[in-house]
Amino acid sequence: MKQAATGKQTTIGIVGLGKMGRPVGRHLLAAGYAVVGCDPVEAARSEAAKVGITVLDGPAAVGRVADLVLILVGFDNEVEAVLFSDDGILAGAKGEVDIAIGSTISPSYAWELEQRLVGSGVGLIDLPSARGEAALETGDVLLFGGGDTALFEKWRPAFEAFASDIFHLGGFGAGQVAKMANNMILWACMSANDEALRLVEKMGVDPQKVREALCLSSAQNWSLTTRAEEKPMPWSEKDMRIALDEADHARISLPLAGTVSEVIKGYKIRNGIPMPSIRKVRA
Image 1 (tube, rainbow, N blue to C red):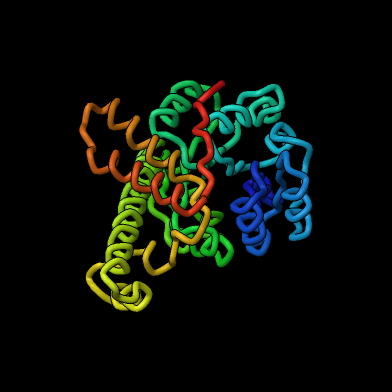
Image 2 (cartoon, rainbow, N blue to C red; image 1 turned 135 degrees about the vertical axis):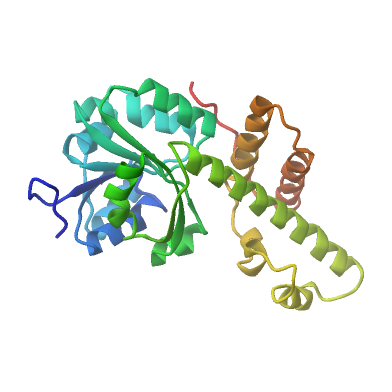
């Protein structure tokens, strides 16, 4: 059993009990933490309860009892809601609470959050992950971390329960910057894989055999070896929009990123993969 300084079992809250939150909670339970959580989707709540997570009514209830709250929702506006709404984490916490944002959000929004919460008693960590759902299930994700060093190290043992590689990269928001870079490279590789293998097939050579060879060659990359293009890819538009928006703010030209965004769109259209609407930071 993991104990806080008070001698009580350390409680970690998870807001978002879906494909990320459920396995993270399972690993934390196995490591000896008490785990509570919430999710608006009944199926997610049910599956979380099956692995032993105590399901509460909403973010405020989670904030009321947790020593650390992990936010694992999809978009900036969802982070905003679970933090600041009338039923948000901060409404329930009513004082000091540590919050780790595992969602992939824009770095600019992360820094805005930091400024809004100065002097509030809230400890902020950003903690986006990489390597996908399979790594979440096995506890082998990579974490891109940002935030105060002492705060980050305080919670590192909890992060080690569900991650095999943990990088503290700087102040709050640094993790989101690194995840943005990761996603830019990921989607660029996937775009190159798609174009190269389509050309191979058009020229009469078996693309699957070529793929096997490429996976052992200097062209090897994660999306090629994991066949990432066979998954729904729901976040590609969001990921590239973050990169292009941040490039505009930074006044830097990223022509390849713009092209990659269109290549991924074309791949989805050709293969009948849905393209979700990009949600705004806040309504």
